[in-house]
Length: 199
Image 1: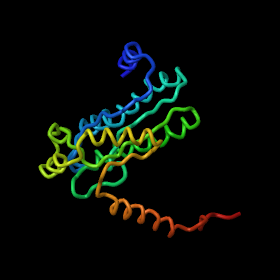
Image 2: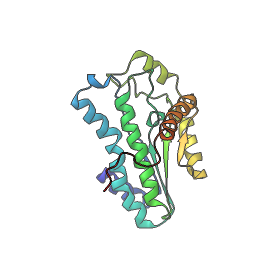
Image 3: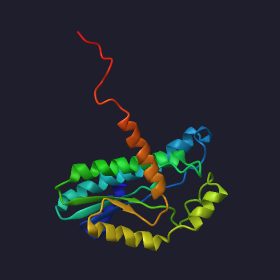
Image 4: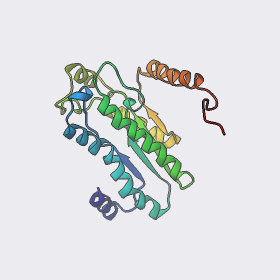
């Protein structure tokens, strides 16, 4: 990634748009995955974004012109789909959302924008290339949104200054249920600590 950043700058000049888009599937129940599976999933899905930030951000700072990062997470970065055993994949995408939120905060006021792209299933070879993907997951991906539509949506989101960029999805009810569960837990939490030792 370091070499790629240097080559892009040498051949293209000032870099203004960076798309951290590397990703692999890692389906399977958590206990069934090997340490190598976990390392590979985080190495590509999380460290791919980390290395993109590390090596391209200095180039964007250098020219001091408006620029933008788009980090590809997933709808799985917000909820774990119980229809497929994809907890490891979701864990990597939750990480990408957190990295993107942190990057946005750190770059506020610099002229460098940040978006996190969170598509639902996209019609790509990601499932076919996976040795872990179930047939039902492969079918879901095959029926997913066209990549061209996702790309167009991402560019529209950049122009509009959107941070969270979603594609058409049916996950809203499940997201609402998840957030309602979180808010309900907060409502039941005491407003101040109880049972603390006093002197």
